[in-house]
Image (cartoon, rainbow, N blue to C red; front, side):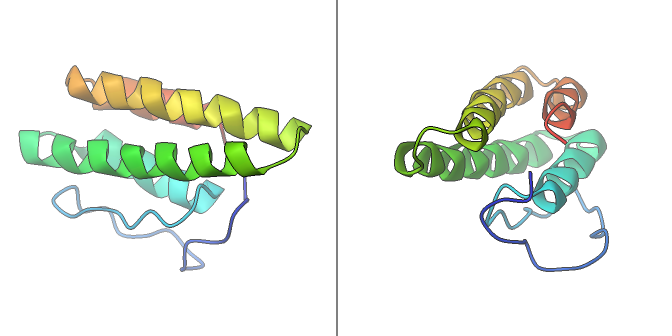
Length: 107
């Protein structure tokens, strides 16, 4: 879902679960970066960062859904919006790998 911009770099970003991922869009690159960080997250602090990133994806997709006319793309983004919410809840349950699997379904 390479929509709403491109999140910077052209290659994979370094995974450091102790740092927050800059979420400026909901592109495939952004989702892959968040997924990689979810899979590497082990501490409470890491999970707080992942929740913030998922909140950002949820917010950006929510704005898109409200402002985009009805289309297949809008429907897909609406599903991602719900998936970001589900992933957030899994992180809150300390299940970051399960949250990563939810997001992988949107790539």
